[in-house]
Amino acid sequence: MTAATRFLRRLTGAALCLAAICGLLGIPAQARDQLVIGISQFPDNFNPKINSMAAKSYILAMARRPVTTFDADWNLICMLCTELPSMEKGTARYEKTKDGKDGVAVTYTLRPDARWGDGTPITTKDVVLSWQIGKNPVSGVSNAEFYRRIDRIDVKDDHTFTLHKNKRTCTFANANDFHIVPAHLEKPNFKDPSAYRSRSAYESDTTNPGLWFGPYRVAEVSPGSHVVLERNPTWWGRKPAFDRVIVKVIQNTSAMTANLLAGGIDYVAGEVGMSLDQAMALKGRHGDRFNFVFKPSLVYEHIDMNLDNPILADRRVRRALLYAIDRKAISSQLFEGYQPVANSSINPLDLVYSANTKRYPLDREKAAKLLDAAGWRLRDNGIRYNDKGERLQLLIMTTAGNKTRELVQQVLQSNWRQVGIDMRIRNEPARVFFGDTVRRRKFSGLAMYAWLSSPQNVPRGQLHSEEIPSAEGGWSGQNYPGLRSPAFDAVLDGIETKCEPQENMRLWHKLQKLYMEELPALPLYFRAQPHIMPKWLKGVRPTGHQYSSSLWIEDWTVGK
Image 1 (cartoon, rainbow, N blue to C red):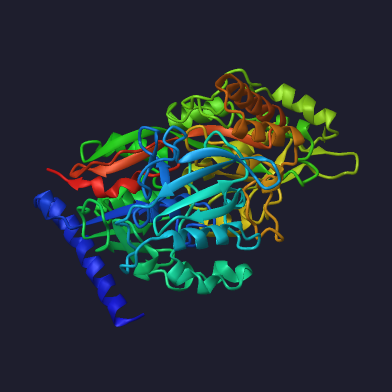
Image 2: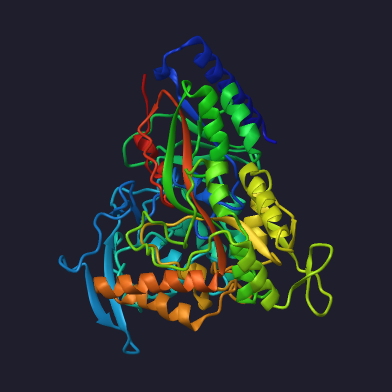
């Protein structure tokens, strides 16, 4: 540990103590120069192109800006660009690809005042390198499909470029997944694409100012503990209110409550912070001390099933698993109805939701009949076996320390035991669970976690057969169940390309129908995000979708 690091940690500790004392003594809020945010997970890496993880997205939103995003009103907007591409304005046009397919060309202009944290202008050189990294089959980016759809990039000047896409999609203006990295730092690290993940400056030199271009830049990373962000002097927008933001990682959600009450943290992030049940209990005891916002969201809590497992490959078993769960009781008794039962992967808040899908209310008799039909017979010990004498035993995993998920696991284990399924529990820290186990499909049975989604987001990455992660593909793609279905592939392709409103809606409804018939995952509930804010923190607007409120941290202010 360097002397500078030791000094910063002492300074941080002193500031935390001072913040708590100020609160007790009633010192005016205007004296606050830092904000301490509590989250429950530590990112497995800091490269915006590698792995999707809520904790990383939340932190990086303060230090980066996407080309486009959805705002708190669920509208697509520019952040790093100056204007969305438009057919009417000529910045988007249909065209044919070299092989005669229907393509589209979309033109963006980067903000001319955008700078990396070391003062280097953000230019089309960064755009081109970011595309080259994204489309390389062994670089291991999360959404490789987005980059593969770009056949070429025409560069007009330092700020204007045209993406020539080989697929004509309804959402051609959306560049949310185009994560730009600095060419002046990352180009040498990409000489060996297969080693890019480990050689990226985001891993080897995370606090380099040249990696960041948001209101803040990453100044210190203490693995598993905290991340310190300091004001970015090259930021072009509104000056943020706080000199520094400290994101403190507290993986045990009970300890999160203790830290909040003791003044160790100011704000629990709703996107990846405290469990809903604990937030509700805290409001009951200390509702006068904080502002509580329970934001309904598109966040979808579910259980992926490894379809390569012979037990789970049988659709009858998957349906039996869902019929055996008392999801209504989980929603009402654990969450007081704040987190409603999910009857598909699409939230009723979304315009493309269909109410006409197969439903799975608690029905243990139906679950038992399905298991019987699948060849799993109940024995005297209350567990089912097949005719080979093999026990119906599965493993369920989730993020260790998340008390809500661990409680839900116990309910599920009990529910399934009542129909003769022996479900074992083994959990891992979030960094391991998401960074290795789920990403590389190492879970043998079931994996419980949440998908973050944006409005009308086509789940191609999660359900298309081309998106199954593999070593050959650098573990890109997010089809972790391993779903291989021509029917799903055709519907997903159609949703993206058939833009006539009625036909597009028909395909959305067909997708949800397929999902609930085939059950590549078990829907549990849609989460409400409990934001717990100090009375003096103003300007936070929870979004309810995958793009976090911290993307607008420059609008957060200190009030009375």
